[in-house]
Image (cartoon, rainbow, N blue to C red; front, side, top):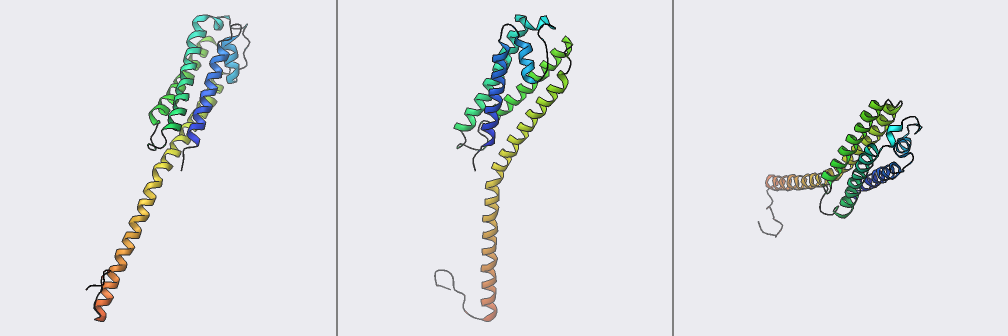
Length: 186
C-alpha cells in the first residue's frame, strides 16, 4: 500500500499557496487580488493601505514559505515512502500548522482593516486544511495498521496450529496409538 493521498494533498496546497503568493506580488492590486483568490470580493480602491509594501511583502513571503513547506512535504513523502510510514510526518505537520497560522493571521489582519466576508472564507479554507490533515492522518494510520493485521493473522495461524498439534497429541494418547513427531520418531 502506497501513500497516494498525502503527496497529492501536499502538492495541491503547495500550488494553492504558491499561486496566492504570486498573485499577491502583483503591484497594482496585490493583496486585494490574493484575497479575491481566496474568495473575498474586494475592490483594491476601497482599501488603499493593502497595496503598501509593508503589507504585501510579509504576506507574499509568508505565503511562499508555506508553499515551500508543502512542496518539501510532497518531495519528502514521495522519496522516503520506502523508509517507513512516518516519512515526512514532521514536515507535513509543520506545513499544515504554518498554513493554519497564516490563515489566522490573514483573518486577524483583515478584521483590523475592516474587510467584510473574510471570516467565512477563512473558516472554509481552515476547514479544507483540517479535512486534508485528517485525511493524511487516516492514510498514515491505515499504513501502520496493515502490518499489525498481518502479524495478528500470523499469530492466529500459529495458535491454531498449536491447538491442532495439542489436539492430535491428546487423541493419540487417548487411543493408545504411538505419537509420531514430524520427523517420524516418537
